[in-house]
Image 1 (cartoon, rainbow, N blue to C red):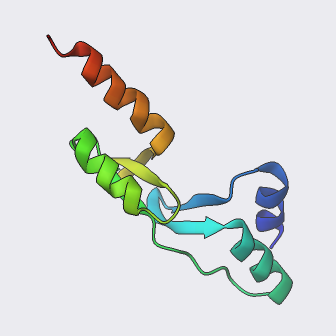
Image 2 (cartoon, rainbow, N blue to C red; image 1 turned 90 degrees about the horizontal axis):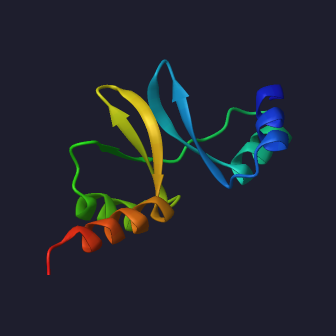
Length: 102
């Protein structure tokens, strides 16, 4: 519970991925963190979207649109390497458009 309190106090995010043993375990919402503290129980994790560097921008776009938290965890090999959001995707798509020859 103390770890959850710290996360709630130090982070403004509505959702965050849970990493355990260098594996993506799921996603935890602020609401669920608070409920688990209040009720004295372990938090219930939501599923989290994951992608790999080999995914195309189109594949990532479809994944993010359907992702519950609006983000995906980028995995490199079997380890998490970062988080991708729709805010990251838009500049990537724009850079592709500007690179195309006319």
